Length: 184
Image (tube, rainbow, N blue to C red):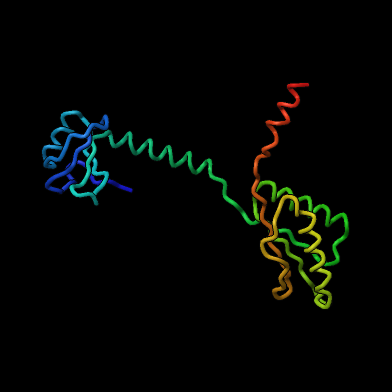
């Protein structure tokens, strides 16, 4: 967001705020610009919709640098929730199923949503109930760490279900246990 500054401010009167936050009152924009130039700073319109518009005396280059630094820090700290997918066939072996289950649980504990898909090929379409049982078993195994968003649904040759991680709430009983250890 760019702010009008210095000579770009065309309003006849503005409310001026000094660089230290002090209210200097309502004055003409020429007077406000003169005060800013005396202090070797910029006059920046920070609230153009106010009556009269609010302007602040500041070092605009330093302000923009700090703003970009804050935005960069905010982007670094945010966690993007991805939808991870696990694909299986209805005739999957037990060990392969356990590997897929372990991977799915890892994705869920990392905070990602999970899409579990069973793909039917050829004559397997006659046994969609096997795929539904497989998805129900997968959801039951992940029940401790995930909740079922959408149950098993057949779309063409794919049957899918969606799982999302349960919100982690910190245990409230922990301080009582520490007190019990201290008394022993």
